Length: 135
Length: 135
DNA sequence: AGCAGGCATTGACACCTGTCAATATAGACA
DNA sequence: TGTCTATATTGACAGGTGTCAATGCCTGCT
Image (cartoon, rainbow over all chains, first blue to last red; front, side, top):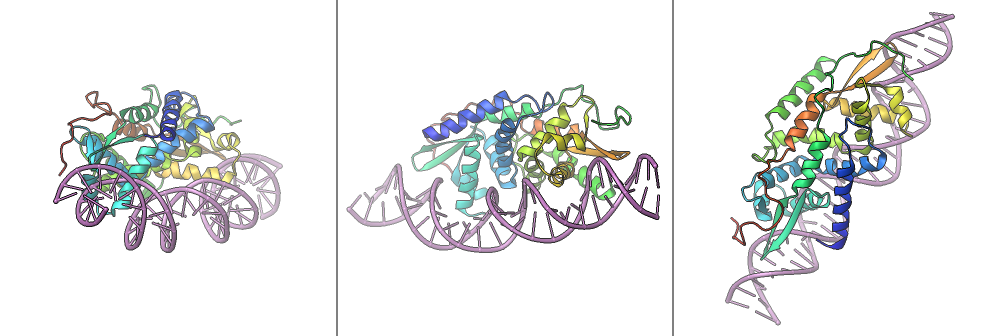
């Protein structure tokens, strides 16, 4: 991981750690932009499947060649998706001999999960305070 | 909510409920497509902020006019984002008198959070099983 | 050095997305 | 009925995104 990528990574972690659950208080524009980068990366079916392949693999890491075999997509396309997942801090990579191994970055997933966590007190959908006039 | 929307909504809930955590086993293409729709909706800073405004509001619901006031975007743009969040099942809406009120759909957020939940046993990043040859 | 395999990068292209102005729709009230 | 307010829809446009073929780079092997 080069210096630039590490900078991005640290910045992302900071944004995520500073973000309260969505239910506590509204995100400001900066927080929202940081978190949205990660969700956008999760918003593609191929990337979700790649992530789940890595996450569910015993040992926690996968060779790129195995990922390529799991899809009917070109090798550059898979490489592109891996790059996106790495840039937002969801995956890390390491070269060993001729092969690249990708691993989950558990912190990022965990922070996202916490962000979406709801307090038990949140009411279910339905009209609440009658028809009070807003503003 | 019309019949078509209700169909989409039920279908989405089913997909989410049937999806194991990412770490259990790889998602198939259909599961991934369903979940990716929701994450894609979360992958925009404005929509994330809208969602956090609704989620953090005491009483659990917000009038559209309040959301409009919170952004320097045109009214149609906000309306578009609200539609997207509603279509993927993250928000519900209800008309009372002249005003539209939007509320969180807690089930969808909760399912997403569970999907991203990691088992405590997952190893941190780092080389694992030495340099075993893949395939 | 030369070659072969594994993966990344580049460039191109069709498609999708966020935004706005203009317009439409629906309810409240006179 | 007509008008006003609140929200949704339409149409258009710039910029972003997923995909592939072609190419480049790195590593190990001969």
